Length: 162
Image (cartoon, rainbow, N blue to C red; front, side):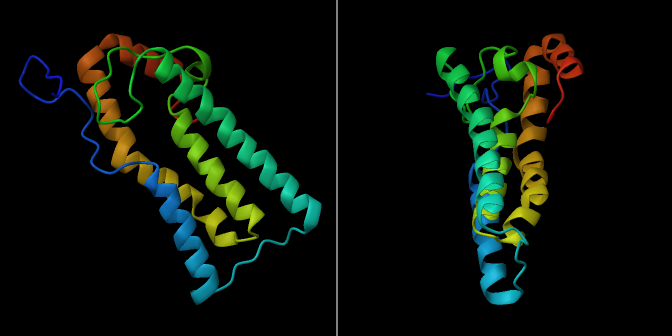
């Protein structure tokens, strides 16, 4: 049963599309563009390419895993359409308000570099932009409505991205 707010509305952000699918779409689209439209290779070879890929992938995991752990530790569901019982402002959330979304982009970039696919890397800003429009802006409206000054003060002290 859905938690309800006092006004009879569903208690959760109005997110209708799962944000993790956005970087997956960016990856598939980049691979398709590379294969069927116009190759955009990355001029990185061997160890340099894999080294950069590992750094980007590690950065993505270093942002996403602690964020998910904090959700689990506080008994929250990371799905943005679920109810948020409290603002998490500790750990990785002291650095960025959206570590999972930021991490998803770095994972996409890391895979693009590993594949030497410039399209996958070039699509990362569009991935973040799409996530903003399908999730973040709805989450921010919901959290401001639900938590008021607690959330607006948090927004003032922690950046959306980095």
